[in-house]
Length: 89
Image 1 (cartoon, rainbow, N blue to C red):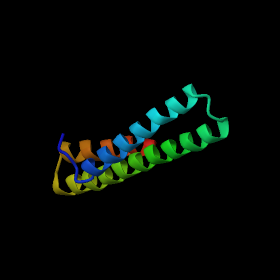
Image 2: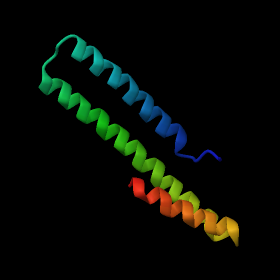
Image 3: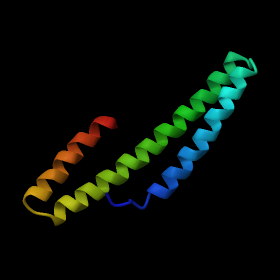
Image 4: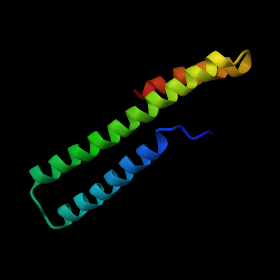
């Protein structure tokens, strides 16, 4: 699998979300208010959703470019993969 140009940025986003999630666990262990915890969980959920969207869009661009440059089985495989990944949008 080749690395897409967006992967380093996605990794940074996910590492930030990972750190944030750890802080939420500490908040819960410290018995912080549910409203604060829910707000922070929403922020993590949004960050992960954004990372997923960037990953999928980048992959679709890459997949379609590959499909246009290929012929036969490789092209059919790229189109099949394109159809498969869209279910995660």
